[in-house]
Length: 134
Image (cartoon, rainbow, N blue to C red; front, side):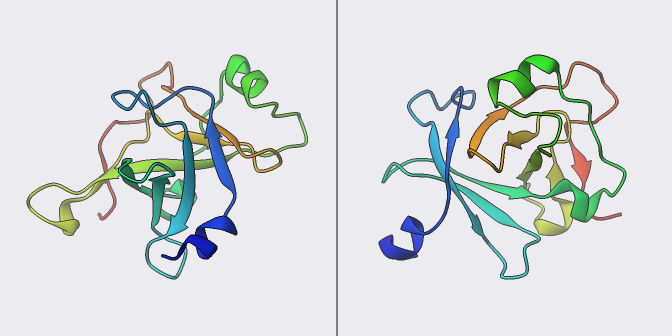
């Protein structure tokens, strides 16, 4: 990806760094497959982390977690603003067919100001490892 292509993408500013990556709070979300089913959550730092992510609605149509009021306030999500959710994906050594999505800790994005955070949902309704394929 060229620098000019990155410049046209919205910059996601995490309110808190992802666990294990304290120096990285600025990311871009880049399509990984051309059809909008897979994304890279790419740090803006030259040697920063990159995570595979999915829009959970594409894979899990019933996924609609209740966001804690504190998260809505931190991201300035008003009643009329619908958050965008992305779930991080793990591809194990067995390969892509065994990939799982973390539905317990989605990345929540306010599409109006591009503030984002990862929230760990307080209940166990949503699993940490949900297979992408059934």
